[in-house]
Length: 365
Image (cartoon, rainbow, N blue to C red; front, side):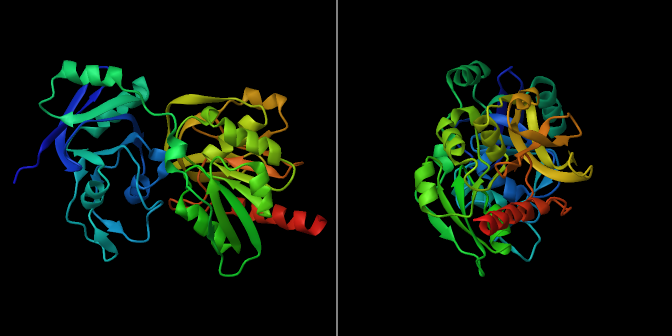
């Protein structure tokens, strides 16, 4: 049986026709981005930070190792769509329990394969991220452009992916208790903390500072998540109230929220950073880390100068800020994902620093 044809249409009128996998009916408007990782499509599919984004995979073969039970970053994927060059529906992997297409159908996620992803990626790099429509190949272009012009990407994405009530993830041997403000937290962050003897209580994104302190944590973690950090004024104010009271560690969106809470500014990158091989320089040690990244926004470097934060890491590809800290308050953050380990284990020391600062606070109490 021949695969059903589908197409994607960009805001500038470009059309790419391919074949459907996953959800194969209806229209879907997303923000189109690209990811340069060679592996990890399951983690990308299930990362809440990709909510309402259509991800173009630059690696040409996707689906070949299937979907493993233990590799999801969230239980209910919220990615907008996946666009690939070649899709393999007969995976070879002893850990695989489903195909990628089966999971995408289950959660109503559209996919398109068989298009020129190199050309599409160059387009995104040249013209920036933009809205895209995934639709049937027979939909007229003028109708596609009308749908795109009348559609807006939602701005309440964190509220969609955050937990609804607090939940405890206990460590087998508890040395510290951490409250994680869930803006779309990845499961591997929780596992990374659990392995280091930290029990983690996740709380909804709009939990107040008073409620967090009532849980008597040793530290607070600010998670990754989707959307514009400047929209999250509730979380920013919570961080303002918590800073200086206990150690705080933020990753990705959490890094941006911490910077905004200290008075810095953020801005949207032309096409973002998404991949597993971004070189980042640690300004405190001079060492280079190979990092996993997934973000559309960055912290304005000049805006840090009038705050109590200092930059600790920079991206060697474009000199953007990749980390900041306020040593006095025991607050620090990084833009990249130290838990992802796309090959190198370069960044695990960040969790260890968080633990060291919590131990110092306990000792000084």
